[in-house]
Length: 215
Ligand code: URA
Image (cartoon, protein in one colour):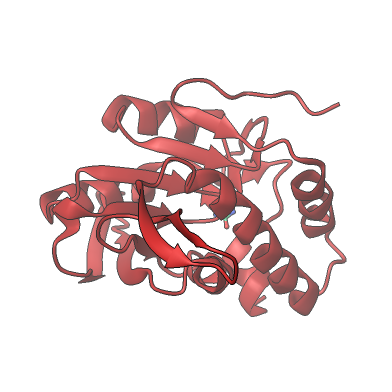
């Protein structure tokens, strides 16, 4: 049985397909190609969940039989923001579902002395204040880089932000809730804890290395 950790701040997607695919991803002998494909598939299932509540309107259309007022998305295009580099593994799948979404990138590295995240890249679409912004990063571990990325998005004007990840550690969830209580997190799993190196356990290892084959 999968325990459901959902509350007002966090949505834990316990759908059987998500859970099965995540187990395949966690296996250490899953290939780079397999990992990437599974991540793409899960990203779409998580995107389905996180985009619930997108504003809707109706449009007058003609079916072959008669006119009707049919539902369509309303408002400005949503924005996906990849937190580099692992966030990129979630982008393509979501863009297949929401092809007109705008895309931004946030790059942060950890200063070895202060241990604080430092920005090295930031490029986001215009008019963030009028759009739903979905920040994506497969791993919510310490939460330091995710919180810093969301700080930057808020400074750039975003007011309606959600955070999509594959795995979350309790420490990262708590950090995000404290820093950004308004940001809804959607995740496929809440794991036990962080280890001394800051990896999520049981986890799946380094998501970037596994998707890009860099180790
Ligand atoms: N980033 C990863 O890629 N894996 C972890 O377990 C934690 C952070």
